[in-house]
Image (cartoon, rainbow over the protein chains, first blue to last red):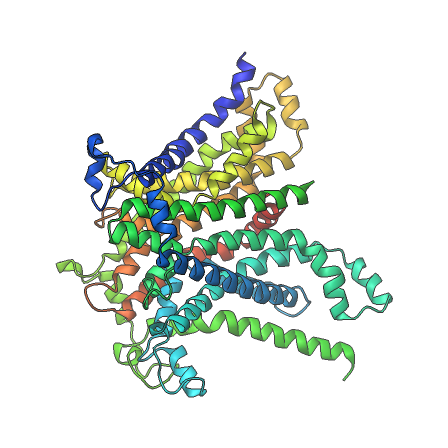
Length: 294
Length: 283
């Protein structure tokens, strides 16, 4: 008997914490999304004021232009930032896998942006983008890309891309690091054989390197995709979702609806719709992992 | 030029590009922390200040907070250290048992429970923000360091369990089995064999948890109201409040706040890389 219970006793502390701090609030949020609190959180104290509205909150969310706009911004942010991080990260990994003097040192330096707290990264780039004296703003003007000093964070399109550039700088090392570790585990004789067969560098990259990196690439991409889809901190500091909703991603839209405008019920509904997207990613993630492990 | 030399030139050009990409923003940041307001607010593009000063550092450390207008940086630093260290210790301690159970016991529902752990890791934090706030406010637990420790510990547990069970699985069972035969209890085996043998994995997990806790902002900013509990990321965001942005202080505070994670990352680079590789093999 004792033997049967033992594993569950070992799991108990972890599951107790996870169930009370994640599952319970999750169910509570689900409940809030089915009633109408209409800007009055105190209604929660009075069960007779709980007005069940079924899927109304979800309907409101799904028929609102703001939601679809936020979804579009989130997808744009995710695809462009993760795409760039992957391309630059792969290039960095391939370079740092070559033999050169000071390789260990350069590998260490490459890691630094990843260790920067997200908030500090946001503050740094907000300053570099400043409309009046930012270094990036100044460089763009000097090199003739812009007509004098422009407010990069003041226009929807440039603001989104500016935030993406900041995100790319910080998160590229993460992908580079995973790919570099995977590159080092490819045995050298594979390349020797290909060279003897006369395969040039490009052929070797596409025929050997990339296929062998597949598991590492998948993990790096899925982890980053899920993080990027939830992006909040960098938006909060750099643009607060602005200008005119230009950087309003789903997480920030949820935050704005509930914490700033007080629409707790629709905030909860937005968050759940967002969770469905994440859950789809999660299922793909688990599927890929299991496939690669087996 | 022969083929090999050309290749070497390309490699060094690539390395140079990597260094510029990585270091340019950092150099600008460090120079900025030693620049006067005049230099920071000057419209002419220049990379070195006319006037070097350590005024920003003095302002950040002294906080100029007699009227409470600027965040007491040192207090926030202390909060962040205590919260991140407690989270690291607590999540490793709690998670170890679950990880050991998954790695070494066979029980009903094992596979499903392990996958559910991954599921919990993927819940977007923003979903929990409102309900947790309502619940914790009711219990009078807002603005406490221990509340942030509890939240961070929970969010890190799935990751810790997943990572450690992978490490426990990768160490040979034979030592543990003979110890069990000699009458050592399972807990004894966990602490005397499994943990010491998977120390590299435990260190890697600890570094990740510390970095994630140090970095956290959303819960820290919503669930705290005074510097009894505000963390360093919140302090940095608040250097910009009260109507005006003090870039000098924000950037200097930010630079200082980045030093602990950067030093940890460089010092434990090997463990981090191992952790990521293990992670990409086992999830």
